[in-house]
Structure formats: C-alpha cells, structure tokens
Image (cartoon, rainbow over all chains, first blue to last red; front, side):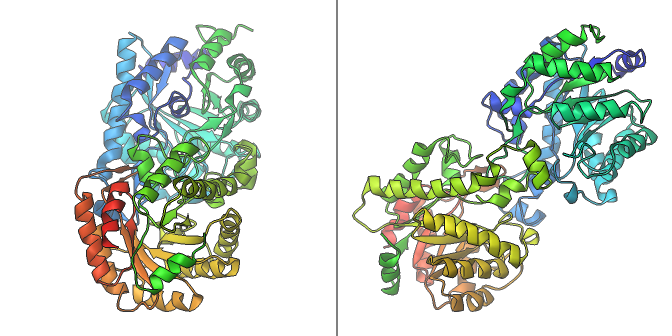
Length: 315
Length: 302
C-alpha cells in the first residue's frame, strides 16, 4: 500500500491525512479510557469510516500517547502496579496497539477503500513535556517494542506524531526503520515557532532526513503556526513535507497526568476556514495535509474540496 | 459547624466515621471523573455527599483529589505554552473548582440536615502524583502551593483539611505547617506499602515524630488494600499520641479508572475496620472503591 503513497508523493500530488481521533471520540461522548479501544471500538471504527468517506487516504491508528509508561507512571513502580493495579496492565498497551490496527483495517475493509494505515507512535512521556524525555537508549528500546507490534500487524508505515525533541525523534525513527517500515516524523511546535524543545525546526527536519525519514511534518500547534513553519520547511529539505494543525484550545482534565484529548473553542475554526488556511500550506509546497486535535471529518471533507480529489490544488 | 464536635468525640476516644470514596463512586455510577464533574454535574456530586451523610459519615471529604494548579499546568511545557494553546481559564480553574468542591459538600450537609454533627474536610493530596514521591516539588514550592490551596478551601468554608494519600514525611510536614498557618485543623493520611512503610521507605514512627509537634489533629492510613492498612496500623499505633484512623481502598486501580471487585463486601470491610479499631484507630472510613453501603456497615462500629 505504501508504494501508492510513495508514487503519489513523488509525483507531487497532495495526500489527505485524516483528522483527530481522540478529541472527536470525546466530543462524540466516548468515555476516555484505554483509548476507547476496549469499551467503544465501534465508535472508533465509525470515526475511521467517517474520515474515509470524507476523503482521507491515510488513516492513523488510535494510539496517540499509548505506551506502557502511561500506565506505569501512575504507580510507584512495577511491583506496586502488580500489587494494586488491575490484572494485565503490564501487557495492556500491546493488546491495545493490536486492537487499534484491527479496528482501522476493519473500517477500511468495510468501506472497500484503499487508504493506507499509519501506525502512530508519539513521545513516551507527555507530548507537551520535552523536559521528561527518557534517555536515548531507553527511548530506542521502548519505541522498538511498539514499532514491532505495528510491523507484525502489518501497518503500511509509521507516523511519529507530536515529537517534541530531536533526540527522541531520532531514536523512534531508527526503531521504526529497523523493522523495514517507512517512517514519517512530525514535530510539535512551541509558541516560538520552533520545536517545543526550543531546538530549531531546521535542525529537526535535516536530522530526520539524514536519519532516513520518508517525510517530515509539523503538527499539534494552531493553524497559523503550522502555516509559518511550512513556509520555512521547503528550504530545509527535499523530502515530502506537510502539517496538521490543532484547532481550539487544549483543556486538560483536572486530575490526570497523561494526555487527555479535550479541546474547546474549536468552533473558531470552521471546516471552510481551516481548509482555506491549509490551501496556503499546499501552495507553499506541502503535500501531506490533515487535521490534529479538535478537527473532525467535516474538516477533512473541506480539505478535500479545496485540494481536489486527486490532491492537486484547485486554486 | 466547626471541627470542635469531632475533636471532642476523639478526645473521648469515640469512633468518628469518615465518608467513603467519591472519585470512584462517580465512576461506579457510570460517569467519567475526568473533570471531577464539579462544574458539569454539581447535583450529582452533591448527591454522593448526601448519600454518605445518610450512611452515617461524620466527616465528609470534598471531591478535590489531586485538584490543584500544578495538575493542570503539568500538561504544558511552561506558562508561555499554556497561554498560547491552553484553555483561557486554566490559571483560575483549579481555585474555582476547589472552592466549588467545598460549597457542594456544605450544601449536601445543609440539605440532609443530619442529627449528628458533620464536618466538611477539604481533601487535598500531594502536589504531584500521590504514588510518586520521586516527583515531589521542593519544600519551597510546596509551601507556596499548599498555602494558596488551603487559603482557598478555608475561604470557601471548609471546617478542616484532610491531607490524604501523602507519600513522604517532608511533604506532610509542609502541609501540616501550612494548615496551622492558615488556621485549619488538619488530619494527615499516609499511603503505606505492604511492609507498612511510606512510599519513600520512611517509617510511620518517624512520621509521628515529625508531625505531632506541628499541631495536627490526627494521623491516618489510606489508599492501600485492607491487609496493608492493617500492617501499617501495627507500625503507626504504638507510636501515635494523637488520634489515629484508617480508610483502605478495595478493588484495583485500572488507570484512568477503577476496577470494582467483590472481594470486600461491606460486612467483610467492616471486619477489617473493626480490627483497626481494636488496634487503636478511632477514625474509620473508606478510600477508592468503597461505597455508601461500606460506610453504613462501618458505622456499626461506633
């Protein structure tokens, strides 16, 4: 499946990535636990389907910020988790990872669609906390565990999303490539317009290209910020590049440490306004365009309308 | 209402009944606890307090576990990042919700109008995750943050503070000092492990030694399985001069929620509480997983 993606990218066509999963599931009333994959897998599948109908040619797995640490971090240590935690927590992540691919594939099969499925990896600690990034060897090993599952489940490629430091992105990229999968790397931007770690965007892009990434993106920042970064990216790389912005404002819950997908005030970015903004990214050379937190299938449909069914800008 | 009637009961060595879980009780009633539900479902939260009062609780604790500025700020890189992409009310949200949690508990008391005295305890825990002493802020930071929190709950009308699931002596000490400074009676509840030690490895005997001179009203154990609480009680009881108490969790922590099991039905839980009473505990209640039925059962030990 990735060959189709590669050839479309090589020919300069734009590819439509799907929109947000977590925030949209929460907006649709899914109680956010285990990424909805155990209790609400039908809702997850329905959302994948809605993105396919809206025109996405890439589906991302519902695995953002899903790794063994998110469970381990709320216990004193492993033995405390075994002592007072629910049975099976140590292996739960891997069950959920497999389930996420199964659900995405089921949505694709039912829609009789040929979208590619991207296995999503993300920072091992909170995506907005570059200060918590684990040491490189540790990060490499933990990303490998996740990438291995995606390789076994035969995703079409890997998407490293919201990476907040070059160091962890490099390790995750190498981990993904060790299984022979194409890897896209997407960085989360800080308020200064550079990486959230304050490392320069150009260095991030260049290092990912050197590390063998197949595409470089920016995500999880407001549309204007994504636009500014995209204008600069063309100068740094010959790789396909792109972005997916969040809309509205992050409203974390009042008690939980790990990422919880809740964005408010998303109505300030109607699908049409978002698509108009994204058209500028396309005009700046971006060929991979989608939506991050707060976006919905309606945004994907609006993107498709301005980018055209073949991904070419109609403008 | 004030803390005085509770203090007097404890001075007479009588049993005082604390309420049971609120966060997990919200989950058990099929509602998510992601935002504490203080702003979204106030009637529902107040209703749980009312159920505990009806079950016999003499101290009810606010629905404010882990509710603090830091918990919200931790989701962002720094102030600049939070202001750039975060919800606009985040700088004030924790304070408003804390005050709301106290108001709801007070309203519950007014509505049920129990014959017995009921004190409202502001439930405050460690500033970082309760099971992770390694993440604790410096004493200077903790002092500043506890001072703000305690002042908010005092202004909102809390009768006392229940500093619960505390994992280290240093953080407990800061909390106890600030409670005194702000002028709120304070109970300190420690989480203990299966050896009856704090999560830092510190001993309960040392905790007693550190806290009693600071004027705390009671020392308790919480948020561990009943057997571990019994082990901890054996470590705590011989050293304490202030009243002591216990409230265990039952079931399993299944982040981000709770797994309910039938391992400790109310009667069996009451038997554990009876053992703690025998060991010297006078404050008895329930932590995660317990329900108003458990509190009603424990009430028989009065």
